Amino acid sequence: SDAVGRSRSSFLMACARAQRAAASSAIEAVVAALRAHPREAGVQENGCLALAKICISGDGAGRARKQRAVELGALEAATAALRAHPHKRDVQEQAQGLCYMLAVVPRQSGAGGPSRPVWQGVHLAGLHPNVGRVHPTLHA
View (cartoon, rainbow, N blue to C red):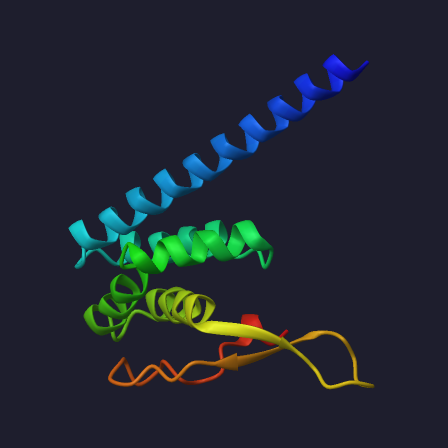
């Protein structure tokens, strides 16, 4: 019936709002942890990985999570991790991956070509020397 449809729609909208709130809270908590423990390589590695997993979706919700992460300082936290742990390969990989994920925009290839995303990196001047190299997981 019409009442059941409205009830289901309201329920789904409430679930979507709850998911957005949970993702936002998770982003805030992870960025706070990265800032609070800059010398802890494990926190930096896993925090960058967690943020990348939270923000990875290319849909509207994923873009909103990326924007929220950037607003909260995730890009700065990732670059601080790169600088603080120059010899920790796992930190370098996860922090660099997060930097790219937060600072790239997808564009479709030209007409007549395949319709897969083509990633174009944003210049990240002044960051760790590893930032700017091709990150293998984005080009698989």
